[in-house]
Length: 366
Image 1 (cartoon, one colour):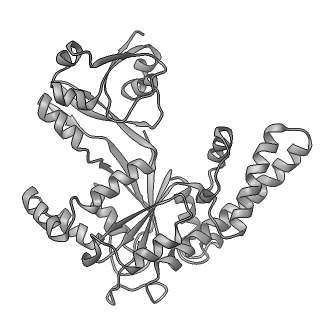
Image 2: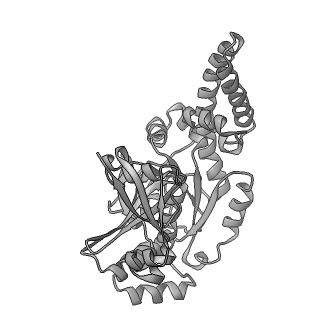
């Protein structure tokens, strides 16, 4: 499933440092603007304790986690929508991503230059937002003109599109992103998805703080929370420089001691990867046995045949039924046979909506 999260933000806010922490790729990280020019793509495992537990029970020959693709995109500056800096390239790269991890600098450090001379994460957010909003407004106005013309000719679908586009135009002209506009129903949601607007992509604001603020945040983070309260967006606090140090620690116990000293139960990178996974609207189902324990990625709301197709297209084409065990039941009873004997194995058909954590076995005929 080729869905990607793009890491965006102004130059020198910690994007590449974070990318290096979470990705199998290695982006250059340095103290000068436009250190990243070409987008770096990395695929990283999605940490999931449930898969570890299943492996402990089944003792398989191999264990395969779910993965998520992360893209480190060049820093954006004012005027990007008109081609300033690496603007055109930045906007093209972000358009290809399915969701946004927007990194904001929330730390003071005189040794790390800021393109605008001082730290202000809300201003930085607004710089990026404005450039994306300008491009979206151009696209919305062009599409609205066509939709209005078709609507006047009696096209009912065009009328629905024009209504939504008009609301987007009003929001953008008011300095708001399209994600702040709620769709009225599933039909409008489908129209919105087909517009591919930059400011309608799901976003997670990543507040990059110093080590002392890793557990509790700081005044900069609170300012960001206030600024995004009306957006349909999440916030994650992470200390990228500290995460880079944690990533170098291979011993599990030593790493845990490090996290305990910071007042953290798990690393920020783990939370960021899991956040990116959820941001993309993804969830996990498992297959578990002596040969392999594996986490499979599907969209939230996918039905059983679609999940079967993730394993192999033939499974979806010839789908007959799915045998489903809930994760907690399997952990409690330990084997498929015990779950079956206890009545904890359900047989589901084509309309079954897969739930996160389901352990599944598919029957098919091609």
